[in-house]
Length: 155
Ligand SMILES: [Ca+2]
Image (cartoon, rainbow, N blue to C red):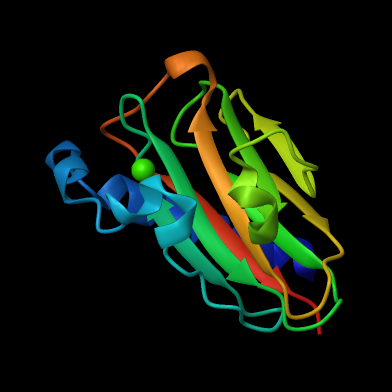
């Protein structure tokens, strides 16, 4: 059931992604606020099996931060679908650990490559703000396709 839902969401995201023309890259609605973890746009915390999601571009020299606050200690799950077959990094840290900008403990981190979407998660502290960081590996970028990030929490 969960797998089916994920695939459905993913195919939905892909069709969104394909519908956005290349020129839309200058209209990324979360830029430039998502360049700093202190102004990171909030992804709404909806109870599993609902979830919140964002679509965004990794531009040149870009980093994207999003904020997500746990409501309980229930597992937080992510689905990240990259825009292409290049290598991307997704890191999740507590906001109180400087949003992942220093040498701090990472709650969960993933390399995403070969164009394959990944599902992963971790058990958070209740009522705690986390920062999700997305970067291109070694300076890669894509101005024509968006990544897709979906987040949900089990209550
Ligand atoms: Ca950014």
